[in-house]
Length: 124
Image (cartoon, rainbow, N blue to C red; front, side):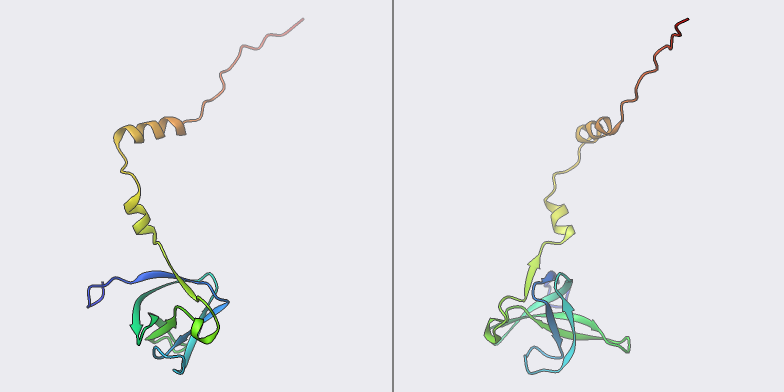
């Protein structure tokens, strides 16, 4: 959890690639980028009405620094760049609880039924 009490969320890159910048501005220096389909963890921040994701970036030197990824690139002609995704933990929170009856029925269903041996008879 962050100092502000807001937890990071998972975000999926929708665009071919989304730039990681040094500050939440399209004019800020470039640190790197993530490609389409990549899931990143970060905190959403609103900067002058524009939503950005603050992420941890590992530079070529191995040092970690803050980076910023634009969520909606419509203002620069790119459309939606990132979408929030449900994490495994929150999906597990919504799953029904496992009880003894569901566990025992699951075990029964998992047991394979083996064929029984038939007596072999030989014809002379």
